[in-house]
Image 1 (tube, rainbow, N blue to C red):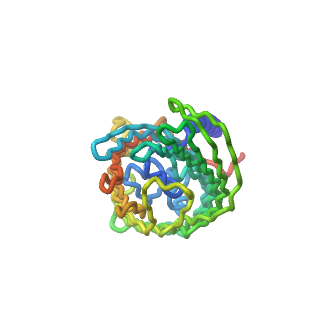
Image 2: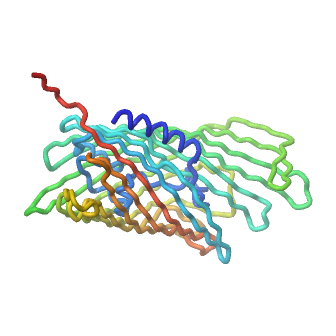
Image 3: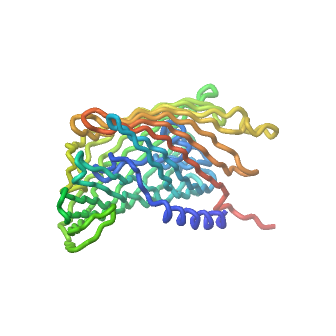
Length: 411
């Protein structure tokens, strides 16, 4: 398994260098970018639920899940997005592919650990005002390196803790060009972000008359990020979208602080082991404070308030140990979600809806598996001069399992 992990690290490093993180959504202009889903492809296929944990899959949303691991698990995933943007009678499309996570979890008895890399926000927009005199574009995002641990207090209850180092940078560009004037101005604001965050979790499972009842809670308190800011201004000549810089000045600005909002998730579900599961989850998002776009105002009036989301989903396995019919061993997943992001622009709430379907495909003679997820969703509105988005996400994850920390017996 170690050789497989090394090969996959190389592949994913190459993929990430070729396909840089971008969201292609104009809503990524605000704050530190558009929030990305931080769970696994299996979670995403069930509407984003973080309730369910087992012995061979990682739960990247609730660290208590590490306490249920029995095998060392390495997983990696990427998503391809097709996006349609509609404003009044104008429709545009875009697409991008990005890395979702690179994670390793392992068990040491009742104690389980996990660490990895997860992109958490994405910036990628290209917008302009009505007369085209101001053009805005941006790129970048936030990532986290995390280390988590979970402990099984008994067969029913597990608790967990995770600490993350958040880092990344965001670049916002504004080019102002006035008709019949040769020279324009270009301003680039760069914010280098860093800071720690924490996540606490607990999961409880009780079997009653053959049914497994699951409950789950996780809480991430507010976290502070430090932003080191650089402003670059230049006089430019723009001809056929090619910039010619004639004068340039760059200076360091004062550091600023940003607050990532708190997050509380509560969930419950019912199922039968290795057969089926169904659950629901409610998440409350606190009010954060963001100023990463200082000095940029493309005729929008954004505010940040508390947000929330409701998720439902589950899975079904016809017969997990059927050795004659492969399709009966496939895990069939489905789910739906509705999210109020907490972002309000021009008096309009920016909400999001999604439905998802997925397949868990067993691979080989071990517990290795491939997971394919398709999600259709909508975001925003075309009221008040805003943009309505429709998107399709296709996610693919690979998961490998092995047994480490075994006691060796010698005759």
